[in-house]
Amino acid sequence: MPDPVPVAIPVQTSSRAGVALTQTAASADGHTVINAGSDVMIVVNNVVPVASTTLTIEAGISVDGLVVPDKTVVVAAGKIAVIGPFPKSVYNQAGLIEFTLTPITSVFLSAIVPGSTGY
Image (cartoon, rainbow, N blue to C red; front, side):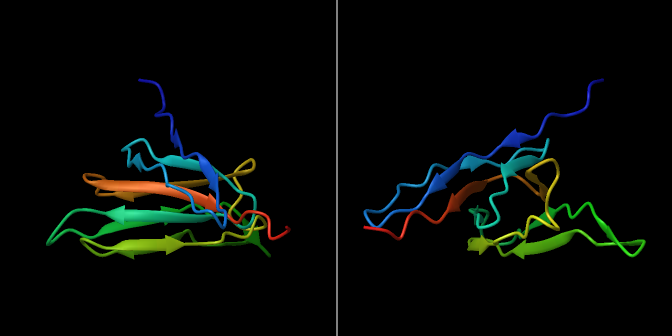
């Protein structure tokens, strides 16, 4: 059986005019998002009233021979979490952030990067 292919989350750019976020349903195959170093992920957990979801972000590096542990974030049932940004020096799997969620039912994801502050 082939390895699962993670679902890529499109990165959207914020603006002063506002952005209607596109949400991607959580997948059992995991997810990736391009890591620009300033990205934040928005996790919407629509499971109410009892199930929290756990997001595990792969660090994938060692410092002085010590493995940096993956980052885990728990999103309570019925809540929205904004998570990040993710330093490229730690969360960088070939330019991507790789992460999984459990459970995935009724969980949706978005990724956003700050837009220009110029005029």
